[in-house]
Length: 416
Ligand code: HAM
Image (cartoon, rainbow, N blue to C red; front, side, top):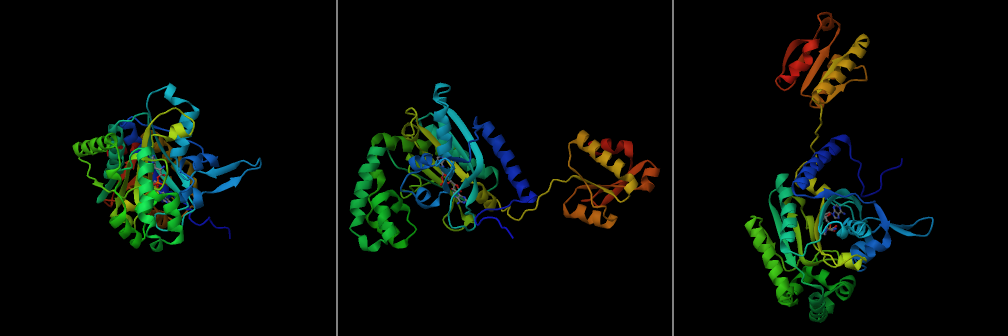
């Protein structure tokens, strides 16, 4: 038997229904904030990700699905979507059209990670990118959007962690000092962590290894002591706006994020419900990426959220929602035409979901099925009722039924 690939998932209609519902809310929410949806290709040239996400990151080093196509071009399934949005922005020279572009997106991303709860190899990200503003109110807007989305979906017990990485030159000075301070303790590091200290020292700050965490707490310099007055002012203004918007947060000086393109503000939102350390979402400012990928000198800020993790946090994993409003029960072949026509009339006039049986099942088993799929009403049509020009409408929740003239079925539901 051919099976799906490890770390991928088939979504059956009940699960897809939850996702569609979430997406509808997200579309509306983003529209209210003036953001428009962007859709970019699922695969891109590999170079886009090595140059943006960064050569020394886990994503680029070991998690990308990369192959050479028939022309020998190296292609990669997108491991995230910020790089693609920036590529499209540069390619279309959108800064010439508008001084600020506000995008959101929803779609699959691919990382060859070790699969576990809330961690897949094909997962879905919802994300937001605002390209064009250096100002702290842009950072606060993005963080508040992320926070308010979880509030909208009833996910409580959130913790917003926020930090600043300062500007590039400051970060270089800081990372040199960090390397110097920690490399004295080489024996505490295993080989791959020491390699990380050499190649991507900032990531040592959010190591999961307890000994290294203790080392960091005791001996790592604090980035906040290195950043410039402007960086500090920017960060403090972001916090001040978040306070005004009543968004709770904690300043976590060890938060650095796993992608290389960030500067200044970074943040993550964590939920107790996920277990482990995994974040619901994360993002930050990336003021140099557009320039580094060949565009103009334009700043940006954004975040992305895992849809699967949102569904876990919403406790929707086992929710079997369906959309059936009315189930038409007919057991007689001579009435198939009439019941299918009735179903279509109801759909067309009332815009509600109507289910008809195509297995020619018994009355009992159609009723059982209507119950199973949570249909709110059933309409029973048979030769006796038709003789009187009526059907029986049953309210499944109230367990009450009444006889209604066929011509009045639509107006009956209109008055419900
Ligand atoms: P990221 O932190 O790598 O950032 O991913 C964002 C979110 O995607 C994570 O917080 C998590 O919810 C979800 N996620 C990541 N990997 C997996 C996985 N294997 N399985 C399930 N969910 C996953 C980014 O991707 C940046 N592009 C965010 C950003 C946008 N920064 C600025 N703009």
